[in-house]
Length: 268
Ligand SMILES: C[S@@+](CC[C@H](N)C(=O)[O-])C[C@H]1O[C@@H](n2cnc3c(N)ncnc32)[C@H](O)[C@@H]1O
Image 1 (cartoon, rainbow, N blue to C red):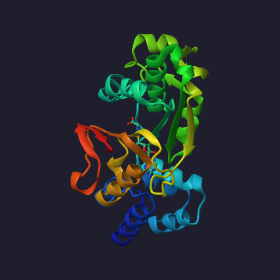
Image 2: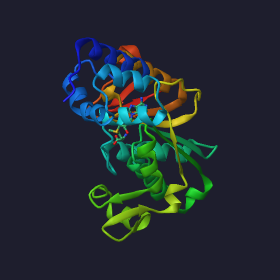
Image 3: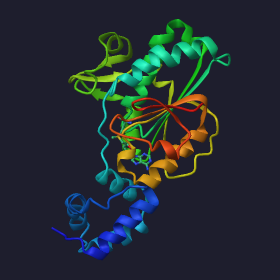
Image 4: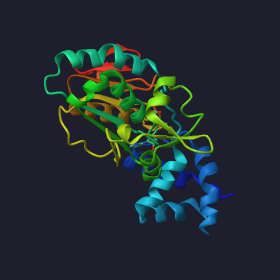
């Protein structure tokens, strides 16, 4: 196993933090454990050599590295209280008050697509035939092209869909052979999947009715976290919402979001 030296560790932590906001300062064992076999496979002998190659390397190489150090774990209908809130509070309000009939939603850090597909199913089920009066735009982004490929394909295991209501499974999924399920084209059409690194500037202003940023901030240091939250604040419409993971927090004195309830914040 290739060992990481103190100097290499500090350099690695700094590089990942500056470029990806990922805080690995307490993850020495994880870095060594997950990367040493890659380094050996590449015929390299040290972390320093590997980091140099990463710095000069293609996007795929860097994506692979980020994938190794983060987790893409997700499933349909995860943290369902957000979806209840959508059905019971947000959508009735929009139905009553949104005269433009446009709904912009962003699933930031969408991984392999289970989160944006769940949102699309909820909207379709809520508006029923009336959905044709609406222009639904679900922007689904992730730093990893690998997971986005899986998301676009939209094929999932029985285990991943087991929290979905039975009626959604019937309406929105096509059963394939070998106990796999594929999202219908009608649901796919609401969503646009693309690569986006949340460390990059966010150019959209006052656009989104809701942003889902769930289980993504776990990797970020406090400064990066609040920077991203504040960038998203500008991208959200007045009256819009930010949903974060239930295990995550926002420092309330450092952002203008109003706390509504656990993991739900509002721009007033
Ligand atoms: C655990 S998944 C969360 C998926 C989904 N939001 C959920 O709650 O189930 C975290 C995702 O965040 C993505 N991610 C990590 N750092 C990112 C960054 N800087 N920009 C965009 N996405 C990032 C990872 O690639 C991963 O797919």
